[in-house]
Length: 306
Length: 285
Image 1 (tube, rainbow over the protein chains, first blue to last red):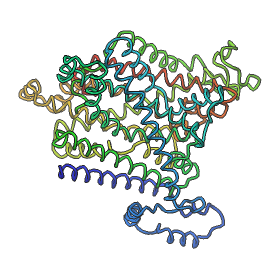
Image 2 (image 1 turned 45 degrees about the vertical axis):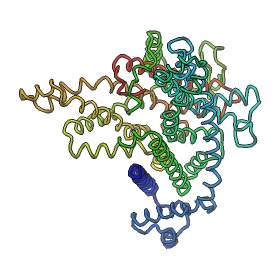
Image 3 (image 1 turned 90 degrees about the horizontal axis):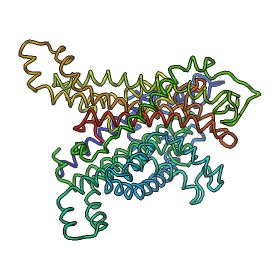
Image 4 (image 1 turned 180 degrees about the vertical axis):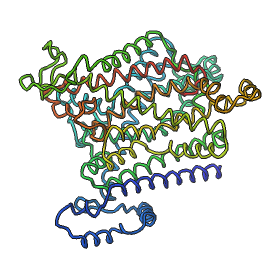
């Protein structure tokens, strides 16, 4: 087991190194931060040199990269080009908003997809199954930002019951979380259905049935529990995709999280902030994947030998 | 993979109605886009400031209404489909060519090429690709060529893994061994005996990835990171329409529906292909 954890840990570290290398390289392509920092104009070459020296831009790429890695370890991502706020302070403010949205929508999606998936599995091949299938296919077929716009159109403009943007009060949670939950449910409902069908075909389910247990006891106590392991794994592995969607949905609702921070940094060409947000999100995804892998290995010993 | 095991048993069974729906949706969209130069010779560009913001279904000249510059929404939706389909198809073709080549080499010749590919694939699948693409597009500037490039870079590994897996399963089969025994060259064995056998799973993956990339392109363009905003595209129209959401819902609704119908059609076709070409479930759920 220790060997398995160590192997996964080394893999994760390697992925982190690759991600940070790509991020550092991308920022390097952006041109001369000294010029961007000051804006073109009445600045002398000597001033530019001073700024480059102060920012450490004259050092070789490898040295800069190591500095960047060191910054990650100690939580220092430099300062924003706009106003000089430390990037870590901006991230500390934005990350909780993103995680709050991520977990709210994940829970909402589980509450939606578990009953729907069970309904489909139990009625396999009949109309509830087909209906769930079509809904899931439709849910996978529109862009998430469009769903967000349509919700705004309906709830904010037509009905006027929900605020179209921002994060103030519980009402502002509804639409961003609903958008994410619908998108996640479209995928999750398929996973629940598959996992349930596989479990329901096992012998112990037949035994439970033949003991005369009620249907719902068999479903929720025996089948759902045993389906939970693959489900948790798949849902955990979706985290990367979840973060990708959340970044986009946040932007539409002006939700003050990492996505909005990143897009503001893009439009303001604020590269330290962009670099910091992308790095932190990427680290998060790698970390969650690692935890899911290890948890899965602990629960199911067959995985370790793969 | 555990997900593939027993996939046949739990999969949704396909009905012919879904095949028809998939064909109708995808076919209508493709035909409309192909014939758009004849249907809308102005390319959806001609403005008529006396006919701004006409609601849909009220004017026979503008069935789906007009936008704030008096441009016909229907024309722009159809013309805008050109970009989406082009990006979707070209990116997938690029990824298929690259991925198939690498996968064939890795699976057939094994050795160092295979080790490198598998290591590389593991890393790439762990990368948060959307975030990285957003960052590069923000820094390097946008454009249809860059969007296609990033999609190829993001997806070729899927084909490489798929092809390698199929080749490994095939390479020691008797018909390959006997072809080799009678002196058929490697290139010919690959082209005549191996490629046709991996075609099915590749086509399935391609269909689903075209759908995926259409969604991705529209998202990138919507946020100003994709196609030039001056070219009519679904993502661009949705970005424009958002400003007028209060007064003109139709500018935001119809391009989104166009995306949804196209992608739904492709997803239905992909499901049907999987049901008929891949009964053992190599391409997963």
